[in-house]
Image (cartoon, rainbow, N blue to C red; front, side, top):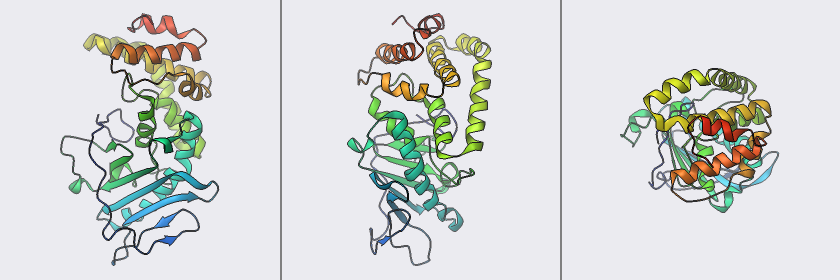
Amino acid sequence: MRHAQGFDLHRAMGRPPGRRARGGLLGCLILASAGCLAAAPADGTVGEIIVSDCPTAGKLPVTFQIDCLHVADVAAQRLCRPFLENTACKVFPAYRSMTAINLEETCPSIKYTIYDRQSWPHRGGEAGGLTLKCAVEYLVDYSVKMTSQIGPYDVHELLHVYHSVLGALPSPHVLFGPSMTEAARKIGDVKGYDVRLAQMKEEVRTFEERFARAAARSPAIKCRLAQGQMEATLYLENSQSVYAFYRKVARSRNPSQADRDARFNRMYNIVSGGKARQFLIDHGCAPF
């Protein structure tokens, strides 16, 4: 599944995490603000950073690590620390409270490896990022160079790591719209939240027109679109719906597409108070 930050593309691959920094974690320095910093290369640029605790939350249940040795630009390397600290200390706890998933049970540590486009090891067309098991590989433009009022952070690939706990999904980016929008709100990225919310409102407003065009090209996509419309509508009606999504959906590894759809459709129907069933069936989902 392929993706660029902010786009509905993504590909998960069973590839081992990226290489460790040169020389390992030598001369580890305890940081007052966040965890431990590996010894920097001799030229003074940033190599590998570890965040294991946060200023307000204390020790994290999951250790975060970032390897920026594949990034040549010094200015971009210097963004690796704020990117990791924002992700570990802001996004991670936001998703933890939202999803009620204790990620440490499956991923006691998560490693980010950042690449320049020239050093990107995946030549199959991946646009920006790749989620492995408890690891993420990212192009620099979609990670540490991401801009916001609070600095760079990741809400996309980390959500894929969280979603791996849910089991088989009806589509790779199910629940992504409401979840990333709510995460932006919770971490204080007001501008990012406003942009995502406005985009969601526009997609809900134009749903029937978009649905008719897409369904004509590919009837199989109809239920995916209906699910996206339902989760966005429920979130716009009540932002607390996104918390209920994760608490009401049944977890299963059953690979059947019919089972995947039915599990999530039952969840939408519960959260909507019984209003979702007819809409979903009318828009291409099988009875559930």
